[in-house]
Amino acid sequence: MRDTFNEINITPLTDIFLVLLIIMMVIAPLLDQQGISLSVPENVEQSQVEKDNETKILTVMVTKNNKYYIHNEEVAPDMLGTVLSREIKDYPDGLMIETDDEATHGAVVKLMDKARYAGVKAISIDRM
Image (cartoon, rainbow, N blue to C red; front, side, top):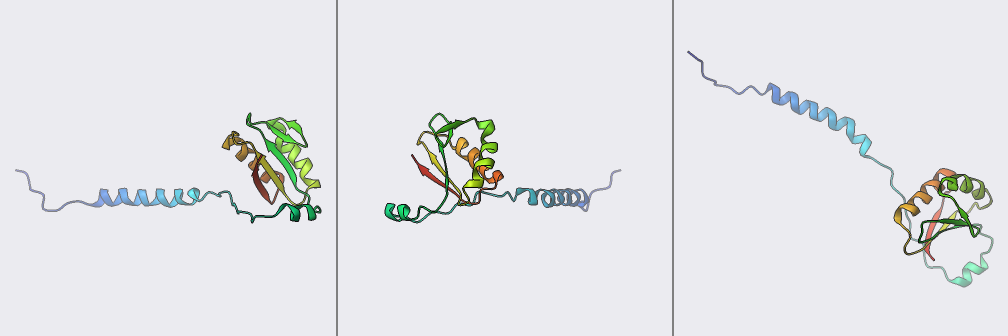
C-alpha cells in the first residue's frame, strides 16, 4: 500500500528561488549603464556670440548623407577619432555638432562617442 502525502516538500522550490536571487544579484550591476548627459543651453543672442569671439569651439558638420566635415573638409568615418583627437587640442572650449535634419541618429551618436573618447568635455548640437 502507498502512503498518502500529508506535506508538500518546498526544498526544490526554495533552491530555485535562491538560484534566481543569485542571478539577479550578479546581473543587476551590469544593468547600470552610463547614459549621455545632456543639458539644454540658454538662448544666447547673436550679438553676445559675436562679442565673445575668444571662445574656441570646434565645429563638425553631419550631412544628410551621414558624412562628416571638419573645416569644410570631409572626414572618413574610420578616421574621425584620429582627426578629432588632433584637432581638439586647439579648441579647448568643446565641440559644436551641426546636423542636417535628415542625418541619422546613429551618425550623430557615433560622432559624440568618438569625441568623448578623444577627450571632449563639452558637446553642443545644432541644426544646419
